[in-house]
Picture 1 (cartoon, rainbow, N blue to C red):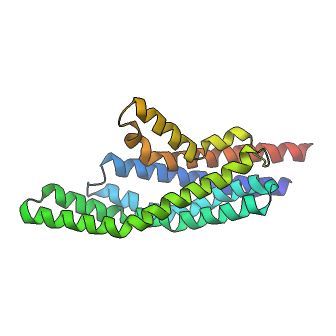
Picture 2 (spheres, rainbow, N blue to C red; picture 1 turned 45 degrees about the horizontal axis):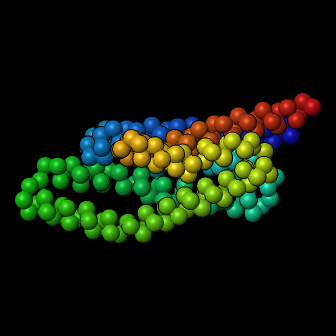
Length: 216
């Protein structure tokens, strides 16, 4: 059990650090509204090389879900790794190109502006399928992980399920009914922010749980 505790702690720290860096990257990118060319884009582009660190946090979640069985632990975590390694990387790889296009459209006029607008529309058309897959995978991963946690079949307390991004997202949509524009303001940070919180809390919970079991 002590060995398992060590195997959870280190990956958890790595995953938490990776998630924190992505939150900072998202804040920097959105701070400039995704249209400012400069040093900030070099920072946001680093996100491409940070996402593999998330595997450490996913490993911790998998260890916590293990008591629920392979169907409710290994499979959703494999999907999570796939999502992190593909769609997340794709979106961050597009940051510099969108910034260049947005920057150009902000300075263009006449036919040049119309051309850039058409280019943006064409790109969005090609990426619409990826956006759909993105939403579907997020929903599948969140629900698949939340079910065993809410049923009390894992090492995690039930309340941890409400930090899985789908629930904060729903909460923000409800708040948006009363505070217009709230969801659009926080939406870029909901997923990455709560993933970071999840990695930190899940690592802490399992570290303490396994350490207490070993002492007993």
